[in-house]
Length: 138
Image 1: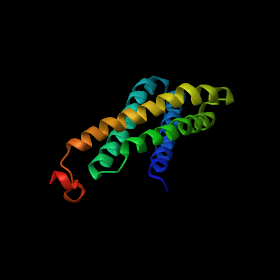
Image 2: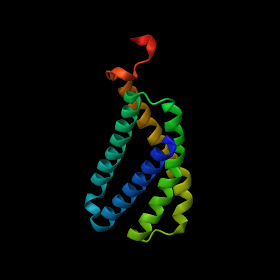
Image 3: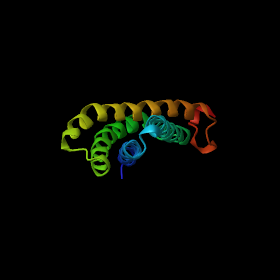
Image 4: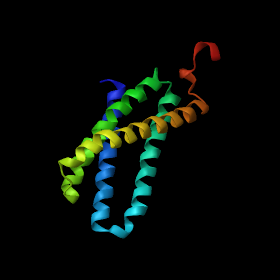
């Protein structure tokens, strides 16, 4: 399976699950909703940072394009998964699908790309494993 498809699929499902979880918290405990959103977005950012750093540290070929394609998959998938999940929690209807596939998908794609880019910069700064260094840099 393509590397970008795996990253995009899992991050899209994760982002959709986070949207569903924050909606469930706001329905059942409205006073905790604002702090839950910050925790959830922090968790999403940490996942992207760690996965991007791991790819750079391992020396994945074409990692920039891999993460670009993964973001294009994760955005719409997160929108669909979020609307489906929220419909089970707070009776969100089909009318929410349009905004989720436009603005929501764009936000998710940007979040995936930027966190992965920062993670890749961190991973490039870390000491590389001995076997993954290019021939000219030894």
